[in-house]
Amino acid sequence: MSGRFSLRTRLLLAVCAITLLTLSIADIAIYTSLKSYLYGQVDSTLQLSHRAIEAAASGGDGQDRSGVGEPSQPVGLPGRAQLPGASNFCGVGRESAPGMYIEVRTAQNKTANGELCPAFAPGKRSYSPKLPAVITGFANSPSDPNEPVVYLTVPSTSKGGPLFRVRASELPNGAILIVADPTNNILNTLGQLVLLEVFVTAGALVGAVILGLWLVRVGLRPLRDVVRTAEVIAEGDLVHRVPNATTRTEVGHVATALNVMLERIQESFRDLQASEDRLRRFVSDASHELRTPIAAVSAYAQLFQQGARERTEDLPRVMDGIERETRRMTRLVEDLLLLTRFDEDQTLNREPVELVGLVVEAVETARTVGPGWPIDFRADEPIEVMGDWGALRQVVDNLLANVRAHTPEGTTSTVQVGQIGDEAFVEVRDDGPGITDEQAALVFERFFRADPSRSRETGGAGLGLAIVATILRAHGGRAVAEANTGGGAVFRVLLPVLDPSEREADENEQF
Image (cartoon, rainbow, N blue to C red):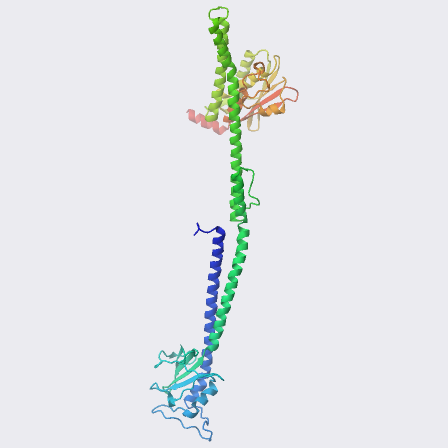
């Protein structure tokens, strides 16, 4: 069924089914209660009417019913109390139970005096109940434990006649007194009740459908928003979101979850797009960087083939050029391999590293390699970090090499090692030409060079600072570049300080 009908239809059918079931149960309960009450009223009327008739039928009232001043002569019943005469029996009954059927049966199950008093209404036919030949099932009455009684509901002896509510009781003289009242009024009342219940139930169903349709439309409005949002997203609009999402309802939870999912999809798409752009730029830059040395090697090779091998004065120049360009390609390929290794697998040989001593060694090497670039070193106290000694040494070497590559000879740089909070820092500050804020935001990207011409005279391949940033990310650190307020540039490396628990764990591993 769930596959053939929409959710709205299923909800409306459920509302109608529940409403119909509830109203049907209520209708049955009301009908049964009213029927029981009405028949109880009839039984009470039969009980009250029965007492006066029973007194007359037993001949115990002592009243003059012959009209001559003497008590009426009873019709004899051998061995039993006497019953009133046939001529005035119905008259006695009519006074006590007007319009009811009255009959007294003897112990031999025959009508006393052969007289029946049929039920009637003024101006209508007389009717008699279709009584069983032998009445059984007597039980003591709650109002009179000494009087066995039974209640029956039987049809009329005439076609189209009314139903009768019959009360039969055993008299002390062994006779059976039968009093029956037509139930026309009860049936009419119950019929009117059924008709009223049908109209009320139908009206309630119509109202439930109308109200349910409105409630379903209001309740499913967020779901329609979800569907529209999904359709818009499918068309390529990743910015669209489900409006008015709330967590107060189940559908609102779905809308909120969808918005969160769409936000993450959009972020992933942006990351993928950025990754593709970086990859495209990386391939383009790598091709550009490799094209020059490859072209140079090819030129030297052609020069060699065109006769340089026979001219001894040109041969050393050709060989030196091939070796120089080969070294450039080798360094570029090694840098690319290093970046790839850190991108794919950032597992390092981690151990406690004393940062001040590491920087001192790098500074001494830089002074030897580039004596034309004076370096001032500052440090207050030893600082330890957890990391790979060789990788961290390469970070400092690249920062100092960057100063030599992008500043003129004579530029002074200051290298400082210190600690801020739970982070250690290595800062390289120079008084060279400096960088702009735009360049500072891009300087750690691969193949970025501040010189648009990408001349070899103003720097290398643009991978040195990218390697710095990649190694620091693998160590849980970061690198920052900014313009120096007094001129020049500032490059700052931040690393987590060694936790004493990490030192204990490292010492335990060594033992």
